[in-house]
Image (cartoon, rainbow, N blue to C red):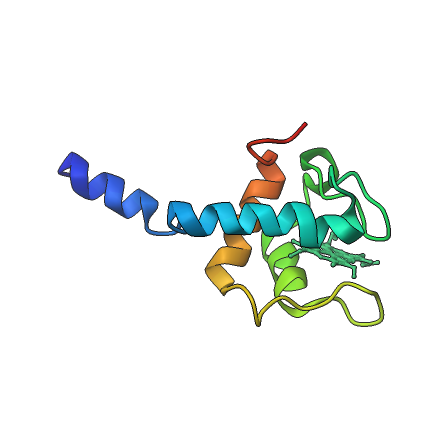
Length: 100
Ligand code: HEC
């Protein structure tokens, strides 16, 4: 494949850089208010790569989009798309870029 097209295809599932920054900020602040600022857990479960390892990404994506009934985990589908939720799961599973 032409290198330019390959790069475009690879980037297709990633939010554009400006939206990525917004989403990362949301993860730290909004998700962090329950899951802990370092995502190590609080009211919500830890969302660290080691605690998420082995869990099915589709189920985690579903939890983010629709929330988890009977728990304080709220649905986020009004704020993020399905693809963005998938990207968030990917980021959480490999560790946020600025994770401390
Ligand atoms: C109001 C508090 C609250 C906020 C805000 C919140 N969560 Fe949660 N979240 C929870 C709770 C509580 C659970 C655990 C539910 C349970 O007991 O199964 C949870 C569970 C989860 C899970 C499943 C973890 C697992 O190991 O199964 C994921 C993934 C998750 N949250 C991601 C997020 C993301 C991403 C955001 C921000 C977009 C977010 N949460 C915001 C409270 C919250």
